Each structure stands twice: as structure tokens, then as C-alpha cells.
Length: 512
Image (cartoon, rainbow, N blue to C red; front, side, top):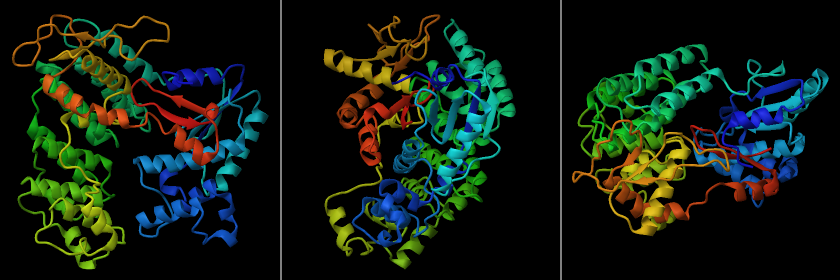
């Protein structure tokens, strides 16, 4: 089952119910016990006799996660696919054990909603879920866990009003009123601090080919404010900026450099997060140099991925002074390729980010073989569109239409440039008529089409299209979902999988 948005699924499961139990797991990723992963895969690991049984898959996964974190068993990294997959193994096991009625319950990441016929049933379900989570050392977020009477709106008001604005405004001729849109988004952000309001707002703006004039200035001002206000929004923001830039919007390099540098400084005391990593990736792609205070903050960073990107910037001449590669020197001095800095040591050597020729990697029995086979974990040269086409970047409906059009064009051997008709945004309901992609017949010689009045199509520049065509075979090789692997690990069949696809982001598969 693949509903187009979460709200629709929420509305369906509430049928005939009087109360709704809402549950949020407190600090899920930071508090997820690595041993809990092993328990979910191999329940016998709860027995002390099997604690050291390295033949069990659960034990191997548990040990691997601890090894990645310096033997720490509390918490898993946030944001990467492996953490998501393993967390789904744990939560899927919990779902399977709870046996919640499929037609009255759903889970979205670590949030549960259970529709109940009475307050007694809701309280009983709450106790069952709380007890089951406790067996995996997980706790409820008391501020977000509650029982509410039905009926209740399935969609947040900010979500509805922002989408309505996008549908009504961007589909009309002319440039949309960016001031009004972001005023609305900022008001909702102030009233809903825990919701991804700004990320959703930026996702809606992919409907716009590229703003011009004052609208572009307002949009860039608002986007940079959003990057500094809402954690996690940098990825979506820079993906949108890249998309607009590929469609002709000039980059405001000084503003973006200053903003990315401020993101780095803002997070230096609480650990550099994925926001910093996306910012550095943007700097690499667009030859931007962070400010001196930001460079100093990067030098003090201990995160291998962020530090590798910093070394990449230094190798490209974008970190001229103030960056001494302190973390790399420390890692080389310790010389432990079996420790938590193995990624930094291996890739710094493979990418020639190090000065001289340290023998740590070449002398290691495993990593020397990996090096000889050109095993890579960090890719320096990536296509321009990679900043747009990735989970968390452009909305899935944009990517799907984009790739479908590219494949169709490749099959028909039609050259030049394509434009996607996105007046209506995400695909319509099954059975409803949809407008097919439109191929521009006579693109200008410079590869930059000038839209006619009222033309709000998303357009793909010919150079970017060529890159996509060159890499489309790699996309074809990737699995569409993790259904098979999740099902195998959790011992559930396809009938137990529900995939929820939101209008402004990627759909993911969650067992219920």
C-alpha cells in the first residue's frame, strides 16, 4: 500500500474510533542500545550464555555498531541509511510483537498513532507499548505522548496552508509573492518549533523553476535564515539553491559562504552535524571558502566525514590558512587503523589528502588489499545533479518525474533540453488524468530557455541532462526500497509492509 501522503493514511486508520493514542519515542537514535539490535535479530542474545556467540548475526551487527563508535553501546549515528535500516529492524520487531491492528495503527519513523474505541483501550495500548519499548531500553517522550478525543485534523494547519499557497500561487502567471510565503512559513515556525515547517516550505518551492529579480533576493534571504534557525534544513535548502542555480539563478556566493560558515560556528560546541557536512559539500561543488573562524572550528572537529570534506577543501585550495589538519595528525600519530578513525586514515591516504607517504594503510593486511582493489568510501568527483537527487533533497515527485522523462528521452533518442510540467505538484490520485512531460521543441542556442508568460515548468539544463544520462545506468542498478532486506531480517512478509510517501519528501517503508 503506497498512499501519497501521511495525512491520508492517518485519516483512514481513525475510522470508527473515538480516541487516538499518540506516542513518540524519546531521543530514539541517541538512546538506541546497540545490544537491542542484536536482541531484535537474535532474541537468544538476551540469554547470558550467548553473549559472546560471534556466529550469531545479531551479535555481529551489535559488535560492528560498537566498533564504529569506539566500543560505545549507547546510541547510533543519525541520518545514515545503515542506522535507519537497523532501527527499523528493532522497531519492526516491536511492531510484530505488539500485534497492533493493522487497520487502526501506523508508525511514522519513531512516532506511533493507534486509533481506539474507548479511553480504557487507549490506556491499555499505551501500557503495552511502553512495556515493550522498555524491553529494548527505550522510553516514551512524555511531552509528545498523549491520548486525544476524535475527531481531530489529520494534517497540521501549517502543512495545509503552505501547500495551498504553493498550489494557488505558483500555478498562476508571474513570480509568486515570496514575502507573503515566507512570512507565513516563519509564523508557523514560531508556533510549531518541533515541526519541520521550514524544510517543508522549501520543498514546495521546487515547483518554481527559478525566481528572478526581487523575488530571488527575498528567497535567498529567507533560505539563509532558515538554515540558521531550523536544524536539519540545510540539506533541503542547498538542494533547492542548486536546483535554481542549474536553471539560471546566479549564486550569491558571499551570502552563502557567510551562512555556511555561521552554521559551522553555531554547531561547534554541540558537535558538527549533517548540516555542516551538507554545507561543506556545497562549498566543494561551488568553490567557496569558509571564513577564518569557521576554518578554525573545522580544524578542531573530530568527525571523520566532516574532516574528510575539510581535507578535500584544503586540497582544492579553499582552506589556505588556519587549517592545520589536527585530527589527521593525531590519528596518524596513534596509528590505529582498527580504531574509530580508520575511515579518515584510509581515505586521506587514498585521496592523497596527506603530505608524504605514510605506511599505515599500505602496511595493513586488510586496508592494503582494499587500496589495491580501489575500494572507496568517499567520492571527490560527483555529478552536479547529485546535490538535488538524493533522499532529503528534491521532493520525490520531482525526482520521479525527472528520471522518468530522462529515461523516456533516452529511449526515444531525443536531444537537448526537457521541461517538466509541475503545475499540479505531486502526482494526482490513481486514475486521475496527469499531464505528460513536455519536451521543448526549439531550445535557445545557449541552453537557457526563456519561459513564456505563465510558464512555471521545471526545466533541466542540457549539461545536467547529459550528466544524468551518463549516470542513469547506476540509478537503474539501485534497489527502489529496502523492503526485501528489512523483511528478511525481521521475518515478515511483504503484506506487513506499508510505505508512506509524503508530498514534499521521500517515501519510506515501515512495517506496521
